[in-house]
Length: 379
Image 1 (cartoon, rainbow, N blue to C red):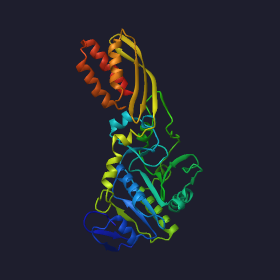
Image 2: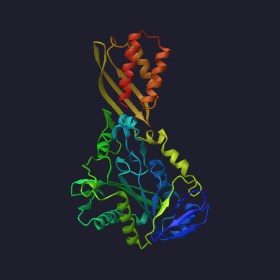
Image 3: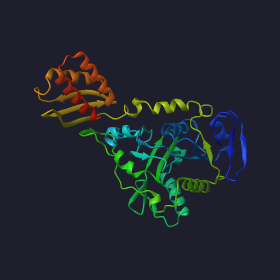
Image 4: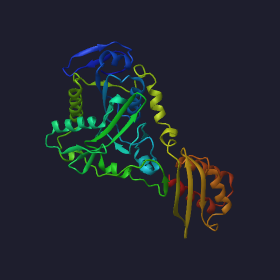
């Protein structure tokens, strides 16, 4: 089934097509065609659209007597858990440079890098039927059926390991009042050369109670079997899931941008992209670090201390010798940064404002710019 504006088509595994009435909401389609359960696959590779679809199903579909499997892949993105600190979890400067977006999901768990070589698998159930062990057994059973020689198993931490040592899947979940979903990743052919550097934070001196990720050695499935690909793995997982729950084996394609079928979905995707959600939901943290700044032959050490709440700088103390930068200028910068987003572009804007309103000679103006560039680099 491709859920788009206009006529919707349902395709089953035998290649037969059935028309589903135009302008049906997704909930109505489920009631008509998925009373026991459904296997869905996204046509989108946008991280925000796919995360929004997860939350739409969780919020709008009655899961008490049915189960849904959702398969999806994204273009390159770093995804953090609901209670994590992005500055602590990933290399934000490198992500900005490479155009890798950040997303904060509504489930817990740790930080993951995703691209088209990574498969996302979401299991929707009622809260009372939520069972991560069973879900991961479906994934490992599918992989073993597809390639009987694969050494894969689920751990007590709800990860999946390859060859006993390498993590190929991590788990996160959201448990609501009545519904729940458990989603996991599956590394098939991800860009590990990018995965490693983007998951290394460059922000020094953070003190935070945010949930930290647990680093693990990782490996792609194609590293042990080059004949594997994402499509065959998704097909195997879908088949195993249908067999487990007595479904007919069909896979429905879903467009998570279709406002007609999924009322309110675009607003949900937009909310996930807002700075206030991605960064502002970070638990309160502090930064205490030192760095050096240089101008011509002059080098000095700077001490930086900040408290950050909801992504906003609450307190700021930048200390450096007065002979390098007058204390009055430094105090003004401290005052201006309080109330600013902990964000390099915001610091750049405020620095420009300070320089416009504070007369400085060319040397001091250059030193001020150097200092602010280093402060922004912490972010």
